[in-house]
Length: 151
Image (cartoon, rainbow, N blue to C red; front, side, top):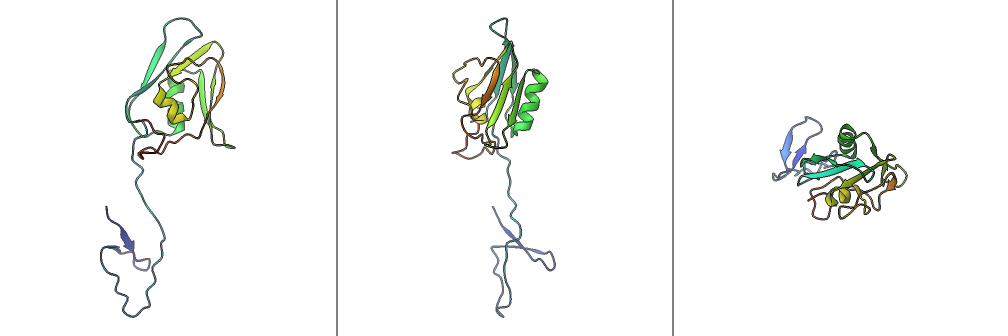
């Protein structure tokens, strides 16, 4: 890992490992921008969710491959497979909300629910129709040992 210092007058970049020659004492250093990579996966192993008519029939299943997902991306994948659930972020408290239409039920893998911030539905429990509110804030950042990302 390296850091670059950019001269705002001429745009030339200097690695921070080099000395800044300030023998005259007239140079000032200011931080103008920080750039970092957010490329860690928040879904590190394949996850899935299943859906079926309420207490009837065979369940259909969609697998979510490893990757870095936002709530919008996950919501779109779910809607493409099954139009019945809806996921959105409550702008007041930052919790994920989920609505399951009448006569449907869903089952999510535990790590998928952890990413979304839900305790309900853990341990392969089927979620009936209704509106659910997350039990804690979701963490889509991933990549950190303490993050709630899917490992």
